[in-house]
Image 1 (spheres, helix red, strand yellow):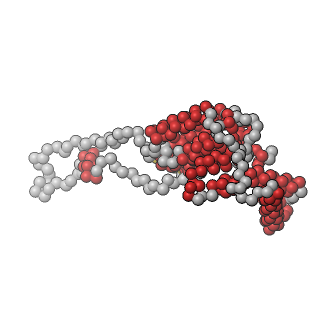
Image 2 (cartoon, rainbow, N blue to C red):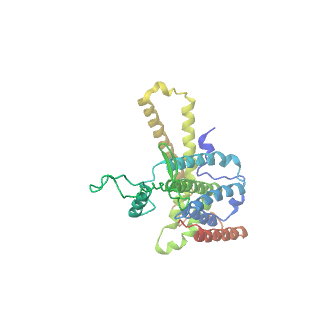
Image 3 (cartoon, one colour):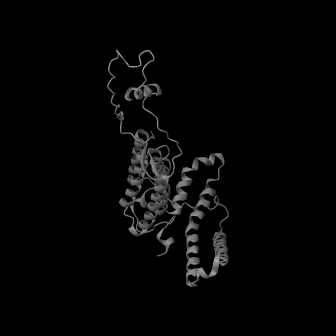
Length: 328
């Protein structure tokens, strides 16, 4: 199976058309910004909730299993590996044992718990006449129970130590990695490049008053998104061409292997530049001069009932985030 085909990063799914496809691209862009900004200063529980929400949206949208199964498995595997590595590495804090009692009270308790030390008889009474019997030894004091079940070190097995800080940091890093990558991938999977650029241009429309070239930015973004499938296609073609030659990499050695991969990289760059030149020639043939003179309305915006429901749920999500999602 082709790895690049099984991991459709940045590719648009044309069929089947799900309810995520039918949402207004401006609403989906706001949802994407929410998934990118909500983990900031959020609690670990909230970060895990965002991961569950992303997986739930994928299942509710009924996106074909072949599209996201292997991609999500790889992403979950990488996130799990990051979680394990972050949990067992040192957390950067030098923890030391601290007694529950102050130093003076602790010494007093230790003195009470120890039996009296035997002392010699004074010089004026060497036989101990007239003295009472020796006091009974005091039993050692039992260790004080802990006031709570709190433990900073959660697990310690040989060189592996898991603390509360390292576990919390592992949850933060792994969930942030999954949320950032998968939310962007899901957005690109259900939104065409034309809709993305139209939504960004619509949101950036007020910046035109400050002489910001919004149309040029949108056109550049459109061409960049259109170029992603071409890059993946060229990489696939070069990989297939290398496989068909049945090269024995073990007999080549390190030097010749590096030379072959440098040649492949050079060929890839030449093919990409040729594709870019072909796109520029096609734009010239169609009489394209500047974005302001040849402006094309890619998408007609119209908010429907499902878009308003999505915005209402987004407001509810942010209300819950501001009330209960802060990091303690």
